[in-house]
Image 1: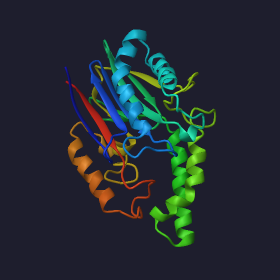
Image 2: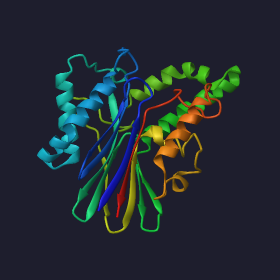
Image 3: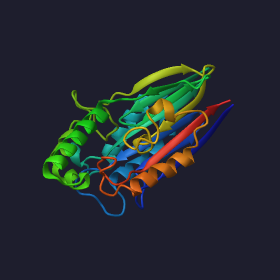
Length: 272
């Protein structure tokens, strides 16, 4: 028997995260805002995530392939949005993590910086993720720290000094030496990382966006993902702790990051 909990908390008046819970499919999305030409009411990333929420389940049932479904939605969204710019820094994108039940198995899928952690019957955690985008972000954070130290300024001020790096990194989306992520395209090339695990040996699965992942990453609520993700994890409590730490670090000095706060989304699946 499958039980689940979920939460999705926006950082603005709109949410660039999203989710699908339509058994046997469980998905989280993390939209990335284009770096230029943003509408103040709703970002194109948020609009694209709503499109994915509305269409992915039916498209998967049509093709019975998660990657094929996403490639078809990438082409459909590109065709529908005449204003999409071919400069990747001006293009919305989205990280995705998904779990699909398949008879005696769970099929896992990740793309971009969304992640999955699954626990065996002894509560031993394993992490399933792409790390290319995270590695680019760590290099940018390191650069931000060096500028803050050299200029004797806080990390929030130093963030404005690394705009060129952020833009250069965004232009690496779906490039050979860059990172894989969902993005609208006439000819999508992004590759989804997949894994298949037995239901009988799996107790709990967590599917989450990087906003929630900050709990064990830079916010240090837990020392590493293995200490955070337990079957007993209270996701509401961790959500509150994340928001409290963001709110008490207005200058980013305690927890260096690119923005004050992020959307955060998680689905907890219990296999009982």
